[in-house]
Image: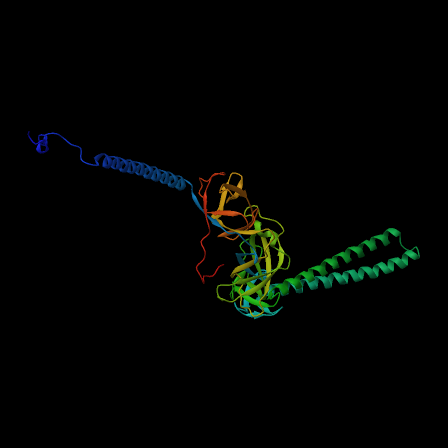
Length: 402
């Protein structure tokens, strides 16, 4: 009987044409699919994040950035420089009061004279003759009056004796009155002639300096002409007037007796002081200014009439007044305003009232130090706009602040 223990099943050869699945392929496929999903999700998320950032950046860029400035009170008050016209306190152009030929002059420009000093002499001969004639006429008429009065006394005695009529007495009284009138006229003529003779001597009306001379020996002086030129000009330099035109906006700070420092070009760095002496009391409509007159002593004669003076006004600080840079001002239909930023970063316009114009800044009311004022606001700014405020840049360490 055949041994079945050595009997086995026929050997099966592998089929090389048949596809077989690699081990764990399904696992790797799932992993790859998950990785791809993660990459897609991450890409979409990154794209969404970038888009959101771009949108936020665009929105931020659409909000204008503005610079905020800090307002300060006016502790020292304001300053103002104005031009002043220096004039002599007393200045006298001297004209001839009688016609004639100049015989001699005694004082040239720059000469110091006292009251009554002789400046020039006009030929006096015709006026001496006129005075002699007036005096002769007065003597003759005075004698006639004396005779008439003697006759009147005799007539009065005869009238008491009824020796003459009242009519004859009245006629003699009339003669005396007429002669007295003639004598009075002659006396006035003598006085006039004497005055005209005195006028031939051109004298200084007060002590000072001769600042002009327009005559010479032999010149004919004619009075009463429209183009008459002063023979001399005498100026008192010991005291000066300074005239200043002050704009209307500063008049509230002008006080009687106030003092002002000033400079003149010929003395750079040297300061003089003048005191307010008078005011015109009215604003000139053509210029919007009021004329002020200051006075200053000039005993040394350092300052000359006709000088240009730079007057330095200092105004005290007023309560509630803040100094605002001119770059922050905005002129709208409602008037002068500034743009401010509220707590929600919204633009708000506030009207102000300018008290003093300092050129690069103004002193005004209507604001407080807590207001956030926009510097250099764009014209397109509208109330309610949202802005992004940035603080005022700090001054460098060690830099001085005005």
